[in-house]
Length: 124
Ligand SMILES: [Mg+2]
Image (cartoon, rainbow, N blue to C red; front, side, top):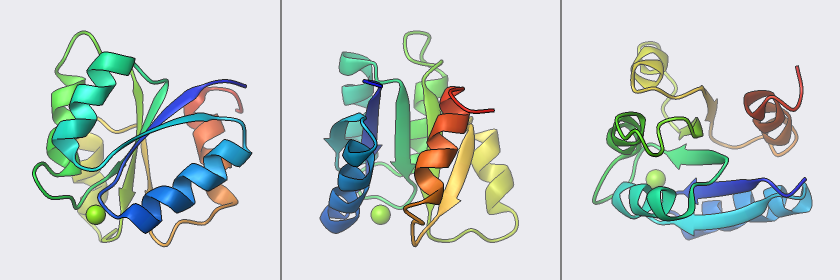
C-alpha cells in the first residue's frame, strides 16, 4: 500500500497502539505529540491522511484541523479526528473544523483500518 499516515496524539501509549495497528496494515507512520508540531510535520511531509487526537496540550486537535484546512498547501489531506468525548454536538464541531470523519476512543483496532480505507477512497 505504502500510504503515509501522520498520527497526532499526546499520549505515548495511544500513539504506540495506533502505530502498531497501522504499520501492520502496511502504512508508513509519522508521529507528532501536539497540534502545533503536527501542523508543522504535515507541512513538511505531506502525509496522505492525519489521525488527530482532539485533547492535546500546546494546540488542540480542532484548532490544528482548522489551520490545516485553511492552508492551501495541505488543505486536501484527509483527516480523521480521534475523540474521547463523542457527545452530541461534538460531531458537528468536528465536521465544521473540516475533518472527514471521526472515531471514538477506545479505538476499535478492527474498525480503524476499515475507516481509513474508506476515507482514503480505497474502499467504498
Ligand atoms: Mg489527548
